[in-house]
Image 1 (cartoon, rainbow, N blue to C red):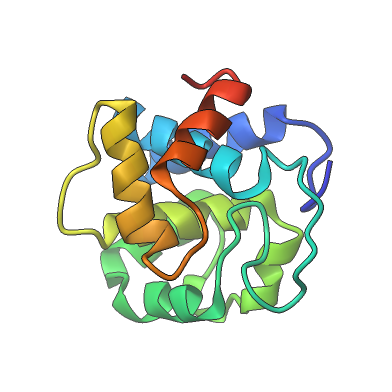
Image 2 (spheres, rainbow, N blue to C red):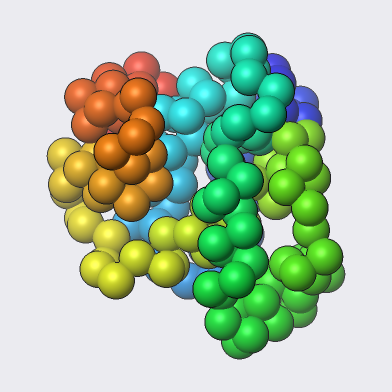
Length: 154
């Protein structure tokens, strides 16, 4: 295991706690778990890039700063109340070894999306590509779906 993980259960626990705090229900849980599968193979992939996407959810610094700038005070206060974490005091490299921080930032990033999380996995794959991986990312919806299936998330 990499990215500060001791076991895969930590990912499920972090996702449950983050969704309990920030909302989104089952669709958000599925999206976050599938994102972890697509981005780092649920923490099994060796991180070969030191300065680009970091942590369990492979967060780039541009996306990290965007989350800090555009997340509402109300959402930041929720994170502070639930986890004792001040989003504005986190630095990008903190995500490298903290699965919880990585999941929090991924959930906050997805909350900035103007459309709801789809219920169907194939639609979540397209949603991930458009809003998380972006047109610049190497990932594909097909990769997302294969990763989800590989880790029993399909």
